[in-house]
Image (cartoon, rainbow, N blue to C red; front, top):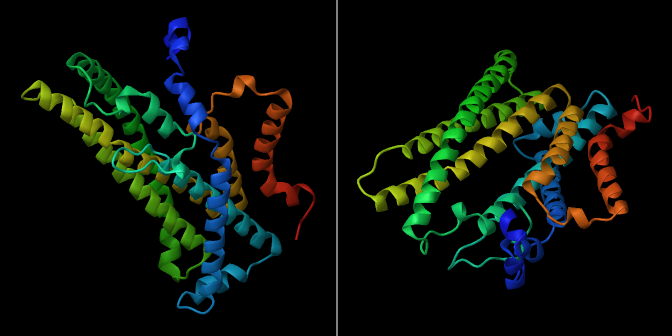
Length: 312
């Protein structure tokens, strides 16, 4: 893309794939906010309905707290957790649909997943590609698969350490008296996500290993290599999201407020990567300053009452 951008003939021929991505897709912020509100309403409804159901103990434990501050921290964490779930729902739903499925308007947001679907040959259909192009892509698949397997091996070890740490914290709580307390619920969810991450990374590593086999003919090699490389994307997303969620829940076990701050830091650090926009160079100085203040507010907002001296 970088070489084409500097070509006058290419510019005169019309907009590039990157230009179309920027103009045809919108910012995801409004959609993330809407989905967050819907999830938050659902979460609060579940807590309210729990008072008259079989999970009454969970609702009582939620409301009967040691202090107003502790209750505030948990509700702030639930708000940020809903935003975290909304973030990934919007991201995963943005994948560009292929015929005969319609490409709904709510899917047309600027995300890394949609960017690769529109601009990367490795994620586009291979029906009209020449054998030479398929050979070139196969070489790239193998190169990326090799580096990905190294990264996945490290993340498998991280997932195993996460499983070990959460299990150590959860075991004493289950041995004494089982109750649906905040600590038990958070640790059970953290343990579940850690297991999903561990299993999904193992599946991804095994799928990428298939690419390095020797196949009977060129057609089989092209199709199988592409199938198993692209087929690892969903397990890898599941593993990555689960590993991050497990870490955040582990932090929330010690302090719900710290868990909310961890989610805020995740938003600030990861937004430009998972929701790329290429209009930043033309942004005015006030807009850049407002964006910086908004990022700071995401991290500092949960701690604002404590920063103002609230000690109850």
